[in-house]
Image 1: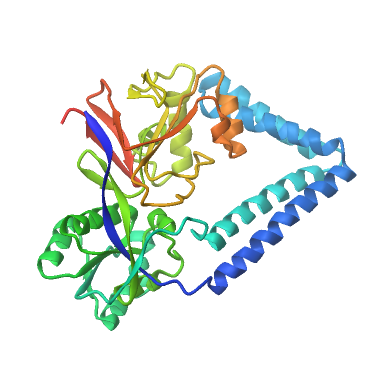
Image 2: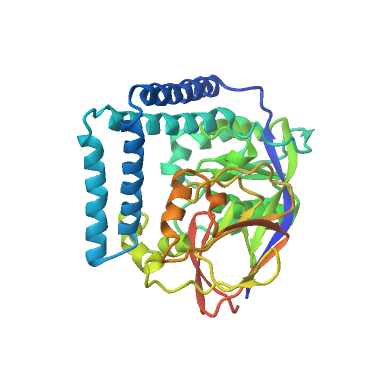
Amino acid sequence: MESTTAAEGTTVEEQEVAGPSLARRAAAAAALITFFGAIAMLAYSLVRHPVQLPLSIILLGIAVAAAWSALVHRGLVRVITSLIAIVALLCIIALPDTRSFLVLGTVAILAILSTSAARVAIGNDLAPITEAHHVPPASHGVLLMNPWSGGGKVGHFDLEQKCRDMGVTPILLHKGDDLRQLAEKAVADGAGGIGMAGGDGSQALVADVARQHNVPFVCVPAGTRNHFALDLGLDREDVPAALEAYGNALERRVDLALLGDRVFVNNASLGVYATVVQSEGYRDAKLATTAQMLPDLLGPKAPAFDLRFALPGGGMARTADVVLISNGVYRLDSLAGFGTRDRLDGGVLGVVTVSVDRARDLPALMSAEATRRMHRFHGYLEWTAGRFEVNSGEELIDVGVDGEALRLDLWL
């Protein structure tokens, strides 16, 4: 049986933040401009086209619902629902004034741009201030670096030379190297602080070594998405700035979480997403692989996942289509993209489960996902826990841990 529990925290050192950068100020301006632009365009179009615009929205909803149905069916049903989606879109285009179609597309694009720009501008500035204190430069700082992570950010930002310029020892990973062994050796050789330049899976491993030996840890966001760095409040676009944490820095404690004996810094997921990412073709063709697998996972004849766990109000759940356990609590509006965490020192796990009735719930789920209101879907549950256990009759279970696809034996 596997259990996930909150783990002992680790000490994180971060560069002192002087204030919003010029790029973040520009992003804030862009977020405001695009937001009010979308509102103004929608209001103006409703006044000019009080019938066509609402009709376009209805047709668009039909198209999206039909497209979703096509994804989870095969054969004739997929063909028919695909045709319905296409016809609905063509009807929007064929309206007497095609500007309704253009308005909807433009408003959607502006909304996406506004949200993205706002995330860049705000970062983690709205998170509660956690206890931190000033510390002097680390004695014998060491940074482990994955040169392949994030499309080669280590080389792109010349982090190896920048480390040497600061008196930090760089350790570059090579094919076949054991990252944990390298981190353990760095501490044994006298490192007063160790860091990781790489993805979140690597961050978790090195942070665990730092926790075990009670030395400070430095997160350098050189991965692809860097969710951990985002929630720490780091500027993910300015990777070299994180190296300043080896100098005069702010030090604070953050939580780690455990899946069995494996540490993770972001989340572990089971169910649909965890199964899809196991596919060999997922990395190269995410959309095509997902479309191919969804009928077997969420289609009307798809078997339920064998995932059993205790519910917050009492009783036991015997299945769920999505189970997400996070290190801290996410602001989760959409399953397509995780939100951010207000804090990383709350000492709790965030638990989210989604259960879908194959026959009737898919349109409601699609609507909640499209409007980013997952909490209103009746099959959605969210709570916090210090420990969360999952049982299953399966010998191996698919799990996604900090973006890595794993198959775990529950009976070890």
